[in-house]
Length: 144
Length: 130
Image (cartoon, rainbow over all chains, first blue to last red; front, side, top):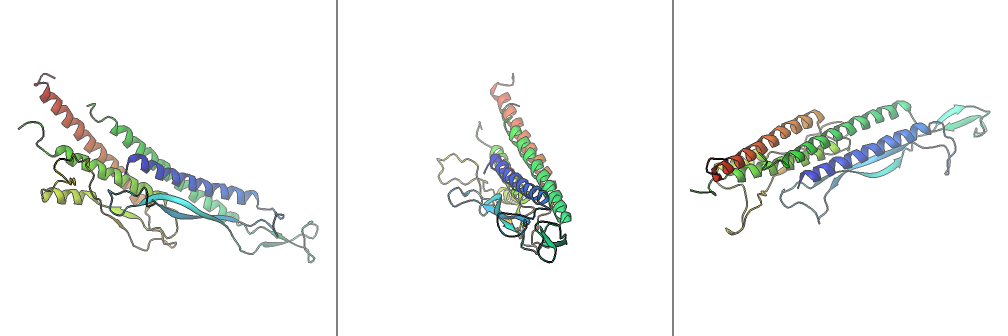
């Protein structure tokens, strides 16, 4: 276990939070998308995070039971909540009653998600910088 | 007397190792701050180090007296099983950040001690003229 592995752990945290931010951007950009390759309107996408553990091969023998290795994206799922119905008979995608199916995106949820992701990203950056400071300090051993 | 003698270096080395492990654990906890159901890791290597000092055991495991130990010692890590937030995650960001700052200071303190110790050895080698 080294300080460099701590930096790797923080890096994994950073990329996962960035992915979450990308999904928020994707969701907000598609807030009015009524056509997709599949059926129906765009569906909200959510990242599912999972704790990453070291594999048997590189598990650290010095620490009895710490085998943490940061975080990973388990999968990206689609939110299956019902689409929002908007009455707009002129719309080309309107059904026979005149309703258009709009994506199941709640802007408030997305904004909250982006704030959480941004804060978590910042926390990981802070840890990364602190670890870097420790590693650089360790390089001064023997110079004093 | 001579050069071997005290265990200062070994103890300080064990402190640095423990501090490094703690930094890893804090990084792991913080990177999982948004993982539902995640339970944070806890570590307290100071108590273990203290125990081994009180029992006058070296904090280092050496399987043969001919081996030079690299200073690695077993570190006990536990999971905090408290329920935490609604999504089952129990990482407390504030506590972790404070732990990290403390760890930073601790690491620097141990490192300064090592450097000071080396300086003393150098001074002794140079017969007090260095």
